[in-house]
Amino acid sequence: MTQAKDPLHGVTLEAILVQLHARFGWDGLAERVDVRCFSNEPSIKSSLKFLRKTPWARAKVEALYIAEQNAGR
Image (cartoon, rainbow, N blue to C red; front, side, top):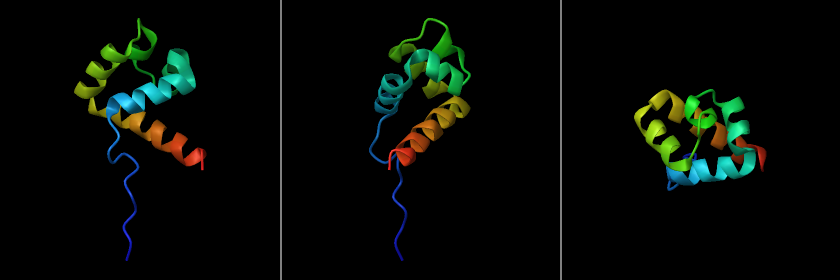
């Protein structure tokens, strides 16, 4: 029996955010994940701080990352 590989294994939140920002930009991220850290004076540093403190928002960002990884296959 083989176990499904965790698509987030070994990937930092910063790497996820940098990749999603490169793909969508801040406006695109704000459309897909409705959080102020993407729409109000966004930066990688401030977004990381918010996402690390906010599990529901982090889960949405991680889900978007996984969906994008699966779409690229």
